[in-house]
Image (cartoon, rainbow over the protein chains, first blue to last red):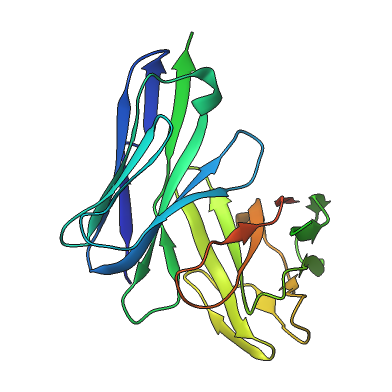
Length: 111
Length: 113
């Protein structure tokens, strides 16, 4: 079936450093969404990207959607302890209703 | 407050004992889904429903049933639970089948012994 691959699975970051998580699809996506799940919590919607090459920012978080609409990235600058959690990308494939989730990137932060 | 509720939040049961996990949303959403979350595997869709009386299989439907008799409710039924169904389950809803934000319930931690 249609899949969305996400790397890395784990990211251990020193507080203040930057990191990036990547999402790749085998087929073209109509849009991509990003969710954050805090430890012990449920996934919460962060943002949606729809246009080819789109870039959106939320404070220290920068989201990109690739030109071919097959990949996306989330870049976090100056990581803080509040960034701890698992980040999921979820792609909606063209002519499909199902959101395909990546396996997630679990982020831990060293103070 | 817009929300998705699930019950129970925690459940320990034995193999073969039928159980139902309820899910309800108050946002008048058409589209509802059930996911299971397992370490390293992310969120895998079990079943989804496009509207009342319209349900379809997701990626991992074996061993599960669902129904959608009312728009707000989407229960997940395990007729004969097995240990490999031990997992964290999330119900979710969104306005429609298109590019809409998805809202998740708080999760149900199920253990089958």
